[in-house]
Image (cartoon, rainbow, N blue to C red; front, top):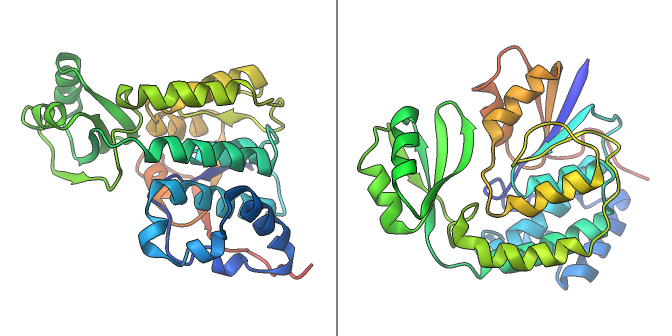
Length: 288
């Protein structure tokens, strides 16, 4: 049975999400994280006001999901991650070390936390034909996340987003609690700075095929994976296509590793007949 591991992104964080991982087997990883970040991940995960700030959310999610992935007793056939989760997927595939991934996420979070322009809004039950037409006619707003057939996320400047909303039919709109218009050209300056950081970091060929956000076709080549990651901050998260790709590749079982059930919920709304599981705490005792 082909299996894929998927890793959630920002928005899946929960208060206390590291507590069940405070075991002897994970002590080294939390200590490594504290040396890199300058603060304790378990401690910060108990502070709701700070946990939901991008600067802290992303390193905490990366650390928790990466530790959970290390405790799995099996290996998947494919890995994928939603936005930030792609960094955990690359770690799980052996593209870079835990420490390298966390250092990248730390710098990514810092750059994104400084973005205060624009915003993001999720649309449920949207008329896709209307939306595509309106987006072509409106500047400064893009499709940031294509999550499943009935849900998308727009990102851009406030006036541009409102222009689109006034012209398309949708069932419900939910503003996202983010500081700026992520996954859009609004963050181009931050993306350019991060691209320079990425260029200096060595990537290895993946041991497991990775399905990236901006190009949801499996890849193992280090240069391809890095090039795709360089586009990610301003590019769209093509999660609906990722879900469909898993089915095309013959995946029968999908395991979401990290807090929450967001990704398996999105996949369930896109693909039929997949076995869906969630791992948000160790699935077996860790005592070593």
